[in-house]
Figure (tube, rainbow, N blue to C red):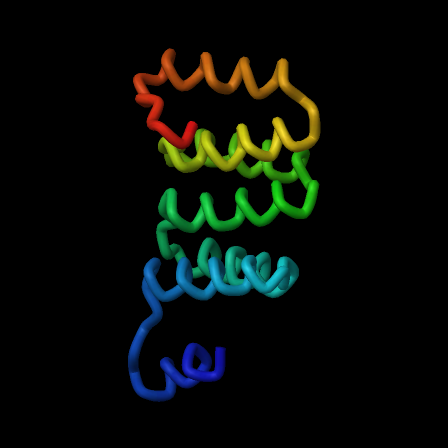
Length: 123
């Protein structure tokens, strides 16, 4: 984080990879508030979010048991013309299964086929 805040001083602009890496690390350390701040900052600076950024956040929310928040973020992907990939579906399905919401997980599994997202061994 220290290096991140030093970047502008050195005329280096953080990009989607920089933000995604930090968000992923913050999420893994269960620092969701800090990750949210970076997520908002990214959006506010017109840095286009990618599936990797969303996946890190959705995965973390699922692991924290915040499935409603994860589903909302999943829906926002479509609103912003960002489409989930097999990893996105996998982490969301895993969270649903762990919470015992098997009907919703099955529905999500079926939705993948409708969106031409192929199932892999993990899912």
